[in-house]
Image (tube, rainbow, N blue to C red):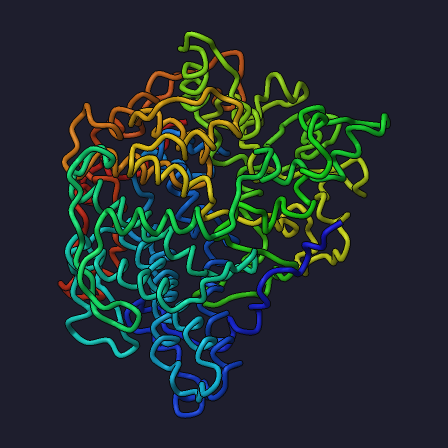
Length: 632
């Protein structure tokens, strides 16, 4: 069996190298006993800086998801998920209803992402403190990774908060503290950083190491460009519309000039032709519930059996070569390891940052006599917090897509992505304080238990070769090591079809899913993206770029979000008397149009900047429509 435990980047020590202030614009990671005159002094020092730059990703993916994980936020903000959870789980519900609990709710992630920018800037600026003679390829790779990570953190920041300060140096000038246009200033810099990364990094795959590579940069050039063109330039259907070029910034690895749609397509085609990626044969291979230990239990005739994976080929199980973590279609991801601790702290760190905490947030809240995690009730899925459950909308829309055909079909991805609680887990019941329950749960990233585990709340990882428990001493919270996918090869294929109108790429994704291969249409691409990537954090920004920045009630995003209203949901554990889903303060249409999908900038940071940064439209704290309200 392939060893996964402790296979991630060894970044624990790197995260403690630097100190920082809470002021997101007053962050100089060089203010330590190691001054810029002495550090970095050798290639290994730059490797440590690089690890520290990446470790911000573990705060996002392994910290409390309702506080730090933007991809989780975007699923909650889309029509794929409800807020749900218990009555006390108000962060998730505020995100789902596009309101805020308080004026600084989103500040922790704001600060963490700027910390990532600061670390990347430091890596870029100090790289030539080292003598790289004879090691120029290593130098360029590390510089390229620094540019890539700066571009990524800025992309996340501006997609969340819109027009913000653009920090491109560790020495922060007055000009840098000024909020600038995302459309005209920040996106050109983001795309220039990705172009620099593409140019500087080796034309080799990182092969599941957790590092970015040339192909990662090419894929993110497409993701950023398509959002800029769709959202800011209102490009509409990219395959048929007139899509503008974007001017680039001259810097190492990027000669300036402009980036066109044709350049973006060429980069994606380079991934297809030269990247060596391929779709896993079985979609289920991507997810930990298809592990071989569970597969063996489905075939041994003893105890429980998870029939859903019984028909898989064993060699396609999650923990087999080429599958699961480091699989053949994984282009970029957040990795995890046995290093979570209650003692981890600091501005950019979270106690459980090395455990994939989305598994806990999406885990089951089975309420039968407080028997959370009881295998007899929920096998093979384990206990969790049940926040951000799938909406009725995604199940209903998906079912309609299957049935509204001359020859109705079954999309294998639906039950590979969602648990149909009534039909799959007959023993599942709701807790008395559950709310916004749809009858479905997330199967992707779901916590998995085994008959072979020592206790109900153990995870299957505890049975893996090389396993050592984390210092949390709580397997349900600490032992989750499934990669969090940020870019998959399927995305490259669907972006190519969306940009070119050539259905051959989309057809590969459809063929793997066992659904009819269709000719190109914009709706076909939109549907395929929703089904393929549900619960992976892409849906909300896809909706936004298909809407443009002048939304009306009939635009894609407001219309899809408002369709949630009127769905029947379980509240307070009362399955017999379902309630009607309604918006917390007004309507999803009104909140989306008011905010354009952006979140509120933290008021504490606006105050700190003393007039240099302004609040986003739709977030006047004196307007009760913007503020969280108890409705259950």
